[in-house]
Amino acid sequence: MATGLDRSRLFSTLCLGVLIAGTGGLYGSVLQQKALPSAVLSPSPTGLSPDRPMGVGIEEEELGSAARLDRAFHRIGYQLEAIREGEADVPRLLLKKVPHDLDDLSDPDQRKALFLRVMLPLVLAVNEEIAEERAHLEALLARKAARQSLTRQDRLWLAGLAERYDVEDGDTAQLLARVDAVPPSLALAQAAEETGWGTSRLVRRSRNLFGLTGESDAESSPMRRFGSLKEGVRAYIDTLNTHPAYAGLRRARQRAHANGRPLDGHQLAESLAAYSERGQAYVGTIRSLIRRNDLVAFDHARLARPMRQHLAAAN
Image 1: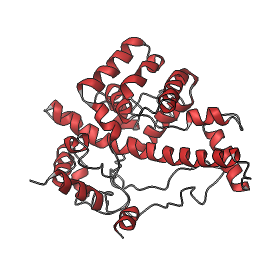
Image 2: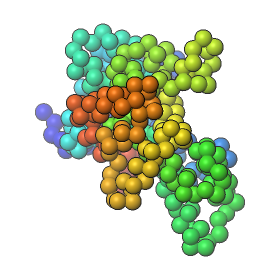
Image 3: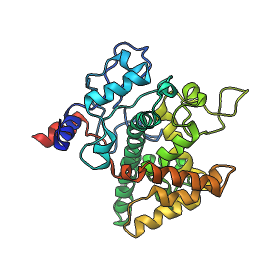
Image 4: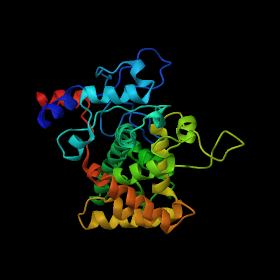
């Protein structure tokens, strides 16, 4: 049996993407270009570029059903307990769709575990993009505070970021409050509640993991459709970061930063009464899901490094 250290090495060196043959597969590989405000297309503030995906021994046909995907995850050593205990990083496996037959798994614990393993890399990947945006924003604000001039590209980047986060240009305090991550425990619990642990027709049909409405291309349904699960995760986090109904969540997040505390999904759930017509009952459900499934342990999970960073560290 592989030790925790062995599993960690496996994730760091191998679990960096899914190599899919052809272009019509049900799922897609990852390590996508980091999203930036539309005002600036190049270069990335971090200087990073996407790495070429590496295969991890998962074949395209294994992605077509829940049972085969579960066996493939087991084969590459992608196990939740190792991640909860900090013994392994999360592989960069960003699946485009939830398996269509997830509800065919007879064991509810197996079904939940598979859904969490599909979801966790997606949430971490979006949070990683937002963390890069926030780090670059803080660096630019520090330069301004030191009375150092910003380049035209810097100013365009700031303007584009403010537009994307629906903040008046120049309101840096509001921008800092919005350009921030959401604890994985909170996102995982809400996705589980909104989709019945990935079994709802909505998520299979529309990749809508969080019951988001508006901007739908279907006149008969108010529910939004997304091209991939990652797009749905990004839209959800953008909603929490920009909608007036979740200003309380953003204030609680700011207080946690000011007091040097890590973000806690169980605590932040208190600010989600407006997310559902059920109000505080919905908050109670989300908190219960977080507790009963030990989701807070995933708030400290990390994505395996892209190959370029891994090789640089090794050298």
